[in-house]
Length: 238
Image 1 (cartoon, rainbow, N blue to C red):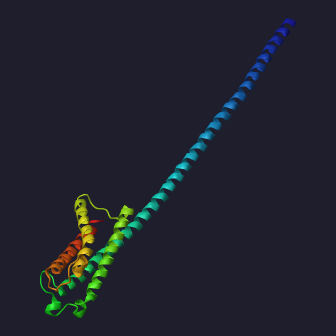
Image 2 (tube, rainbow, N blue to C red; image 1 turned 90 degrees about the horizontal axis):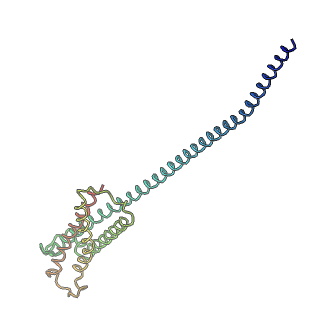
């Protein structure tokens, strides 16, 4: 009986020791598991925060790009409006100048005749035969040149103010631009000399003198070509 009791006691002690060691090992493993769980949670939280921050930054950049694009579009539309306004205002002024020049040419001597101021029945009566019509025509020419210059300066300073020209029409647009530029440059000189030949040393002669007659005729036709070329370039621009 004593030996059996001792054997049972030894078995119980062994079981107790084994249980204690198992608890100790389990107790040591739990903090490590908690630490690993905490580390994984921290990494997950950091990744989530980083993703949210990146998305927020991307959203802010997209919003900023949209605002900048909207501002650029508004500026381009405003410049295009000014370009169209100056362009068509110049066209109207050129047409008016050409019309007044035509009336003056009908009344004044040209290569086609002596003019109605000499033959009778002038278009605008005495107003077309004195300096009144010539002064009005000259003022209209100055207005046309001023608007043309403003339109050109705007086109150079802000190219987006000009309309788009198709690739097929671009050579025609460029050639006609040179044509009306040359016309705008030479027309004031020709008009001034035909009205006042003395500015280049010519003596003021009779109204039927060939020099002012021929110069006045050239002035009229160059005005037609200049106006037509400018109108065509406007039509080619979209």
